[in-house]
Each structure stands twice: as structure tokens, then as C-alpha cells.
Image (cartoon, rainbow, N blue to C red; front, side, top):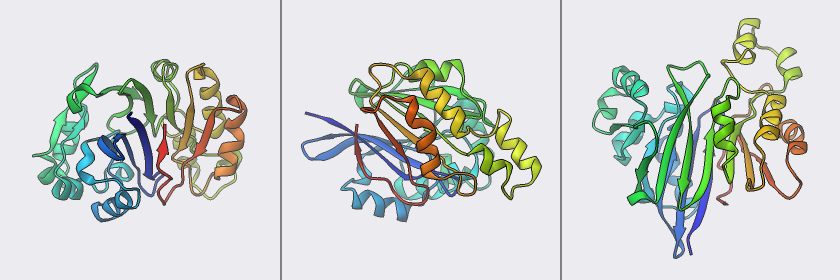
Length: 266
């Protein structure tokens, strides 16, 4: 019997990289990497520590072109040589970048609108747009052996389309970036505070909690809080804000910023 495995290797402005895959017969046979904020040496080390093989990665998906999500895209293309799938808009932007274009060119692929098939159809992926202030930012709805998974790392604000995908999901990864009081009284310049908090930057703990209340449904089993700010949040504050939004039997986990999470069974 197959199992669905999920792991975060890094989550935050220091770098973002996530794995979801299918485990069967004691090993992961197929999976996807989402974002490229961790270098190949660290990634291989983290994969090995979890008993995962880089060959199990069938493709890399990119959510947007901010540096903490694509910092290691060129080296991952060079050393892993896996296809990198993006929207047409992000494909054009990454193809023009002097940091990635030479190694991205032979690996880059364009996702279609609607469902895209991977691993012989065992994994299906659909992207949806988010209002975060990159060239384009997307979340991913992933159907993996019938298990429904949604990942949204940088939102700005929740959208009706994002809520609709989450209302069908078994597990959701959602941004809970900042505590409002910490941001308001913290060291950031006022311009940066406005950029973060005014609908095109990041999602606050309170906004995340409100979003979870809106999309919780009977089939939802797990929510993972991602992209917590190092300066304007703590795992305890993020957890405390969102815990009342879910029934106690449902799993709620703040993902660590700089170190890998456990390898979760979904």
C-alpha cells in the first residue's frame, strides 16, 4: 500500500524548498520538489537523512521568482538535471535572468492551465495565481494517488480560488508569516512594513487563522504553517493564532525556518 510523504527542507526568507512523494515497498518511488531555495549539497544531505533518493524527484515546481525561492535553481538544474516546471510568465522571467538562464534553459518546461500529469498520471498538478508581489506567484493543487494537497508559500492575501482549492484538500501548506504587533513595533522601515501587510506581501497569523476557518472541511486532515518570519513571528504565536480554527483532532504544524522538518506521513 502506498503512503504520501511530505517534508520541508527550509521555509522562510532564508530559503524555501519542499518535497512531496509516494512511498511504497519501503522507499519513495516518485515525487516533486517545490521551489529551489536550498543548494544541491544540502538537499542531498537532507534527502539522505530522511532515506530519500534524489532519483525519486521527478520534477521541480517553482512558485515565483523571489530569491528565497529560486536561489539555487541554477545549481539544482546543473547537478540534478530534473525538469523544472513553471507558468509561461515565470518561464520567460527565469529564462532572461543572468543568474539562472544558462542552466535553466535545458531544464525549463511550461505548465499548461488545468491539470498537468506527472509520473504516468499518478501525480497531477494545477497552478493558481496568488497576489504576492513577484513577477507572478502561484500556489499548487496536487493530486497524488487520490490524495489532495495544496501548497501556498507567499500569498499577500487569500483569494476565493485559493480557498476553493483548500476546501477540497486533505492537507494544506499555508503561509503564516508575521504577528501584527511584532511587525508594527519591530525594526523594519515603514515602507517595508507596508509592503508586507497591505495585500501583496505576506499573510499575517490572524489572516492565516481566518483563512483556515474559511476552508476547513470534514476531509481536511493536516495544516502546515510555512514561511514564518524570523523577526516578526515565532512558531508559538503562529500556532496559537491558528489552533482555534481547527478541531483538536486535526494536525497543525508550524514548519521550521532553517532546518528540515520531520518526514511527515500524510
